[in-house]
Image (spheres, rainbow, N blue to C red):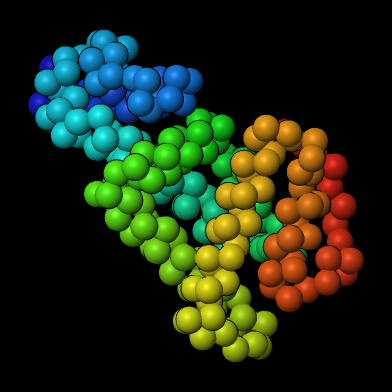
Length: 211
């Protein structure tokens, strides 16, 4: 049975994203040309520009797709958590090891995007908007947690906490990526508990799992 035009477009898009993920993560965004991505995907450069507008748009689309997947997993994991401790620990566990994504590639691409945005004003605004959405979404989750626990946390406080949690997650991942032994899970759990106003020595669930 012949495929439809939409099916062929979807296949081309998927192949370009897969090729870009491999090349950008292994060689770096600036070291890879649009032509190299198209060749690796067995597609034309014209197809790449038609789908993504260029290499920059391809990087943003790739990160958006992976982040939506990771975001869904994190929301599901936190919604299923039976205790506040499980929620806090789930923040790190789901961030560092999403179930259906190549997390190492995802985080390398996040760093590639940050480097690109630091030197490109237009991309900087795109990344700033993405961070803002993440802070708001995390803040809303933390407001619900507080309400479940009989505490008050307004939107401004929730978003502020979201910024701190996001910074901790990203910063610890960067250290863990180059020295996994230095950042075992319990270090991240302790840091998150401190941000939520808890003593790290209380209900400290020891974990020796390392990447």
